[in-house]
Length: 135
Length: 50
Image (cartoon, each protein chain N blue to C red):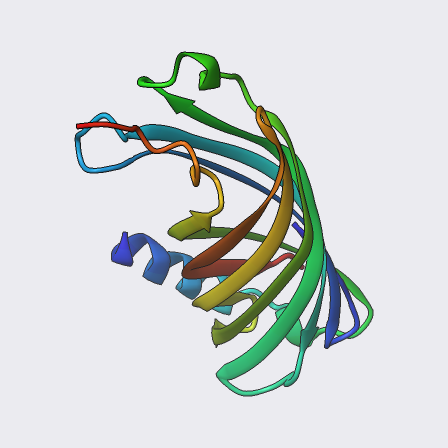
């Protein structure tokens, strides 16, 4: 959800959830589960035309869990993760005045309170974003 | 999926609003799907031995 202030600037609140088993079917497999609530500011460079690039910067807070079957001591529920730097770039294809879809790329640096101690987690997310502007 | 998106786009195009080009304050809703990669999560916890 994003609050648009003018034609270029916006403030967004996002929720994301990822839960996936990482590995190749061996003992090293682990469940990576992460839920975060994010806050960012976005700048759209163009306010007309079909192609509209944008940049965003923000932070996110949530929980991250790594559950491994082979490690008895490491099987934990989610612990706190703070993504203190989150940079995004994207290109909106505005097919209608209120509808846009396009690729987006995000990189982030986070501090995770892992069971063995705090560590830095680097995150890369790439995908497709769909946006609808309400009247 | 493609049909749904196309229909949604058509409906919104018919709305008498200015959408993203509207001045002032507006609200947007959205969604994201894609690939998620994280490093630094499992380092140091790989299984030992064979």
